[in-house]
Image 1: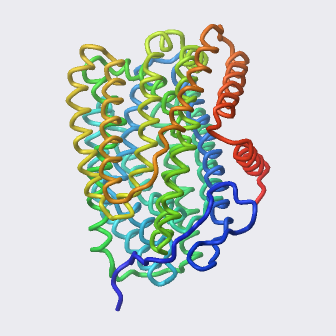
Image 2: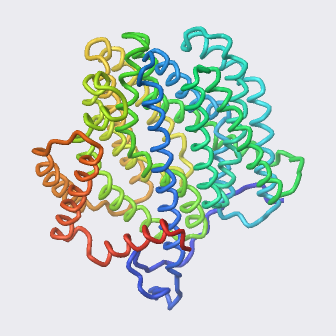
Amino acid sequence: MERSFGRVFKGEEICTRWLLTRAQSVECSNGGKKFMSSERALFIKRLGLLGLTNIINALVGIVLIPIFTKGRPLEDYGLWVQISVSLSLIPGLAGLGLPYTLVRYIAGEKDKNKIREAVYSIFFVVLAVNAVLAPLFAYLIIRYFGNNELKLVPMFAALLFIQALNMVGWNYLRGIQKIKKYSLLIILQNLLIAFGVGYAIVNDYGIYGALLVLFVINLLIFTILLYEIVSDLGVYMPRFTYIREFLRFGLPTIPGNFSTWIVSSSDRYLISYYIGVKYVGYYNPAYSLGGILNFIIAPLGFLLPATLSKLYEEGKIEEVKLYLEYLLKYYLLITIPTVFGLSILAKPVLMILSTQEIAEKSYLVVPLVAISILLFGVYVITSHILVLKKRTDVVAKIWIIAAVLNFLLNMIFIPKFGIIGAAITTLIAYAFATTATIKYSLMLFTFTLSISDALKSLASALIMFLLLMPLKVNQASEILLAVAFGSAVYFGCLLLLRSITKDEFYYILSHILQIIGNKK
């Protein structure tokens, strides 16, 4: 019996353009075989759909900032942030890296029996492990980082447990690429959270009420995800045939994921420890604004493992290279001007979202975090080479070093420079992780990095920045006008510099309009 997933097949060379394929297919140099452009078009549409989903989700998350900060003690908001960052960590750790492993191994798999075995074996292992670990983690976090509010422990433990199970369901949809369903569920979940948590806080039900809302919503989502799995695969008792192979892939991702979390989130704990939980309330709105670039990165992180794994297993190596090359180009094309724009608009946006006090103390955090997230996106794209080569151990080592560097620098910088110091150390850690990942990835798998396109984007963004600098922006309407003006200047410069062609611009615009119009 074949007991391994993910065998590599070397296939024919693929000769194709990325975006501007007017015909349905193009000829290849190896004898006239064709590769349909619809596959890439579908990827672009899915990427756009997920991007739109994450924009909505980012906006929903931002809505909670004024609900927590306007007219309420910043200490309460700081406590909520501590709990939130813990919820982003614990389910991933206690899942032993298995939910993400599911994506790598079922993407492109045709044998339904293997898919069924993989999904249910991972589900039951995650269930058993979290039944033990969720209460323990809940107690430790609340006891030492949650102001010792021990009454929150049972609800927090239940929430950690159900979120860990949900991770299996989310990654199942991700692996079989049910993107529309995934997007709709994510939007539904976040809208319910925004309204539910907002209602709990406004009506003085406190953090316990907010956690109760989160649990009920996650239970609803779990029911829907479980229904999807059972509908597709039926009810099944696994034999755990491949679990050792899954653990060999998944366990090395735990140190990397934990280290990534240390770099992205542990500064909240250290800020609270060194200068007080109130300063977490100052820091987090600015960090959230600077981190808005994640709405671009999240779709890439979601789609690329399944998409690239499928192409790689089918031997379509040149197509994998084209994905990496062009995604990196267009990612930088969008994120570089966003960083410049956020740097200019940080203070007025923070004043609208929170309070003048928060804006005055934290607006300088925004550009530092934005640059960090830009670098993280470069890491997300290039690190998939290591995933394809099943070198998750390298990813883990890079992030362990980055985490240690970040943690030690935070212990020095936060007492001396406050929340600005935390943002500086975040930037240093992300710069190290991205540089190291590029170096090791290109040793295993080479593709073209277009430095000239990046420089043209940088020059265009700088021109936009200089023209926006003299403008006085205070109101929301003025911010929107500044964004529109800056976008026009930036893309106009790109067209003049020929970083993108008119055909590319209209192609991308047409797909955006299709996504908004919900057209196939």
